[in-house]
Image 1 (cartoon, rainbow, N blue to C red):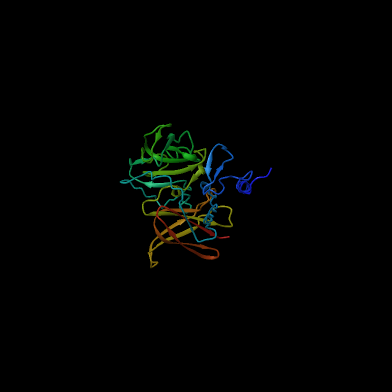
Image 2 (image 1 turned 90 degrees about the vertical axis):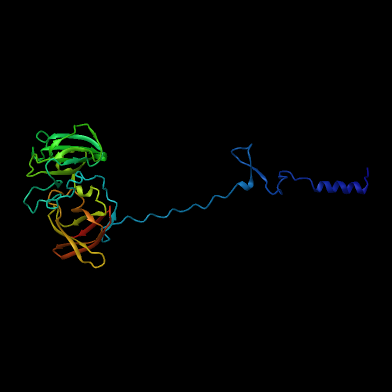
Length: 319
């Protein structure tokens, strides 16, 4: 059967514009519809699909300061205890008999610090905690001797930290009491082996708060007063045992370097090798200081900065 040429031309035009099998008839639309593999029934516009941003490589943290290779490091320290004596009482540590000192061999090595105060001055809890002991030390030994600390209070704090308050005239708490920082727990006295009224204050660390050599230097843990910081000094020596090495710490005037005040102290005595540092001085006004000591090789000096509320760590390698 023959068809007119006009009909053949129409059929040819229609066949050329039929959609091809397997193609999307909306392929030329400005926003084609795609289907997600997880939700076949949910269509999302292709314009909503964005390329993942290029992952950002985190900036490497700077290496921690190492006082072995630099003159000093300034850190946050671990100042968690407030002073157990507050004004109008004397809240200054007695520098004549600091922690781990024997006063040049004249006294037993000191396991705490002293706050010289009048008889009866209120003694405060240095931090929140639970009273672990509150009695005399006649039955329980906190040192090699009984009745050495007299009336004693021990408070347990977080992370196996303990504070000890000795030579009290009165004990105002009982074992198991929950106390808050700044709460009055007793009064200054001169019980035990004390020769005059004062508070003997210790920081102990570990599960056994009666262990005599579990003490830490309280000056590492007491919050510096406003505008002040602390210095920690470590001596690396050839000796296996500690010896009381004279140290001179001078506060310098800003700009001129003129000496404003000089502190004389000694490094820890024998028996305190468990401490990582060898001397600490707290409550130093922020500013510039010079640390000096004499060694077999001669005079060693180090200029350091003290920042308010911070700890300046210094290491002398004397090997």
